[in-house]
Length: 213
Image (cartoon, rainbow, N blue to C red; front, side, top):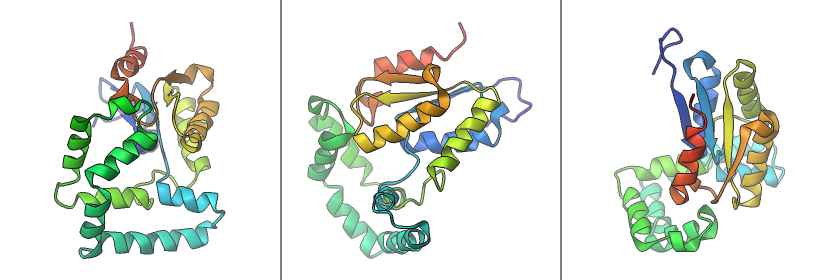
């Protein structure tokens, strides 16, 4: 990782939850990067999102999520539960349901590859930490947008790539990012939640546009 005094600063990009984690980390040292591109970013896991939509206050949601996470990460419950939900059938259903925009892109080889990733030792830990909010980059939307604003104020070019067919709720969060960045900081690309997997050429084209000419 370059230090603030390094003679070079990378142009960085990340997708999904990693994008939010990278943005918050970069906001703590804006001088360490030349630009930041967020690809279909998400800053909050599925379970915290559901609780927020149900208007469950953080004072109740936080301990509930911690308890659920502890159960899901336990050595007895976790692996067995993960084995059930990470079957090829369920992975295909998720990909076709909201992750990919075009079902024809969800090929048997793609499903097999994603299923193989779930077979790694302790792979359930990262997945369950994600869904229960254990890997969230910020505690609130305002906090996350504040991190992005600090990057913009520091003169760092920040851009968000929004999948044109992303699910409604996810797209609304991405549009909120766009409001902070302004029109010049928003690009719309084909795809849903993983445009970098589904339409890599279009995404690479947008990434290259961030480089100096």
